[in-house]
Length: 233
Image (tube, rainbow, N blue to C red; front, side):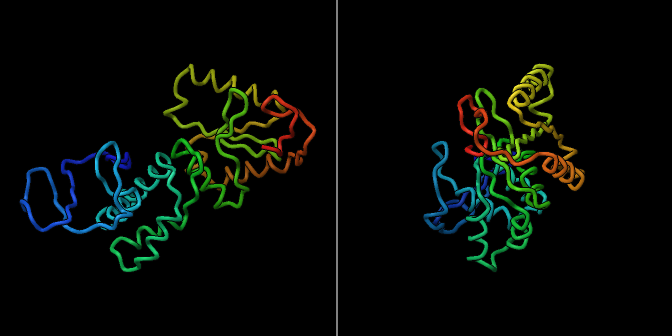
């Protein structure tokens, strides 16, 4: 809960490096073990296990569904790359919960600067269906497209409900699309259903746009307002 990976429950779990103290306290579950220094940090003034150690501990007691949700939140909120977590799993092959972590890590990608779970899942969809990895949330003037293939002149926007549900945000999306198209970019908008429920068809749709676009070199107006080609981004 402190890291924002899952909602809080009715019990707070505390790890202490001693066998002394009260064995039980209402609302507190006490674990007694010594933690490596690299597994401990301070967040918001509170001593806490690192996000990686928190996921390792959670894997021992949580379902794959809950663990997967927590890992996604760690990638989106904390921009946690999969490699350090995978290294811990490999270093401790018999640790309880490792099978679940291996299953989750098998389809993971580096989150870069994603801002939502939908953006993260779009990157995973690209990796799964062999679509070249796009640039993520690159600033273009006053706008920041979700995904950009500068050499193809292609932008993909992922419309999650939380960020695109009001009339005001939809009007802003329309202005953004108009600005991107004014720079010669093709804009494709995708919903949660497009990315999560029908990824194969959506990947084919993206590849279709790639085939229609020829690679772009330098010499055109910079999409940030100067005189540098798209490929310089």
